[in-house]
Image (cartoon, rainbow, N blue to C red; front, side, top):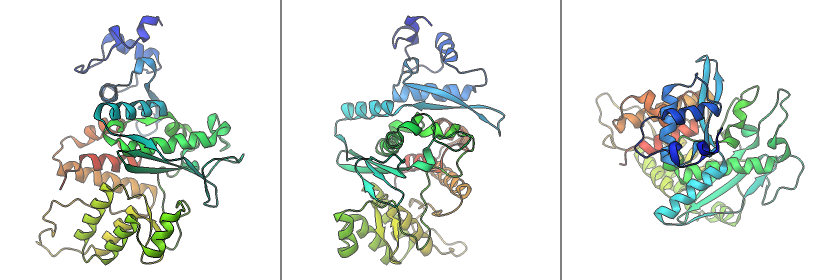
Length: 373
């Protein structure tokens, strides 16, 4: 390949008003490994994503990876970047829009639920936690090793997952946190570290799920003075939201609490529930909303006036149930926003068929398009 073809400028430069790949661009994309099985919709979505993220596919800042799909009997192409690509986008947004971007110290967790700020063990960590701070608001995220590790047919970690598991897992947690902090800028593109497990010989039964069964403590809760204060004096903001939800008389009140907690970035915080269980605030509010939900009389109007934001209805269940519930939430949000052509629109926004997207990614998209109350 000639050196002039891989330059960001010249004939390969992607224009903001461009609606299709030029013949030269298409030729270089195919030289990079994209074959004729790629769908035109996938190429169009990829172009839109490159324009939105301003990552250069010809410098390998972003690329399409094809994986065989048994249902479609063809390769399905997914946009990917590296964690460095995520960082470039995040720093660019902050530089252009103003504000501040920072991080708290990375944390790793062992199999017994003990968190450490440096990982020295030869065994891989069970989880990693990264917290991004954007304009003073915290966006924490936890990645579990078993959900992201890339393995061989013997279920042994391979590549960098075998050599540097703590670093790889921290990259996955950072990608989750950055996507929460910059949902509009990073939606539809995933990092190579996150997607490595998609090439495992046996796909994982569940991804991006962290379920807490009734009566079970949360093994990933980060200990600290603030959380201890919440247990004793219930002074932590997240705990206050949980206490208010426990006293709520109807589902509409819980929906409003959920909306306020989400705006405050507290849905991932661990709280103590009325049953003395440890749960993430978001999961508890969803469960509390279900408790207060009662069948409405025939012909009765919605107590919220029809414009209240729905609270997700699935907390614990099979991966299939979680995925189906997430699709229902996205469809409901698209209907409320009066968006047409649901299937194609979701595919373009997610960068992949909706059946292949994780429940977390689908719910994140629903949050973006759901009209403000």
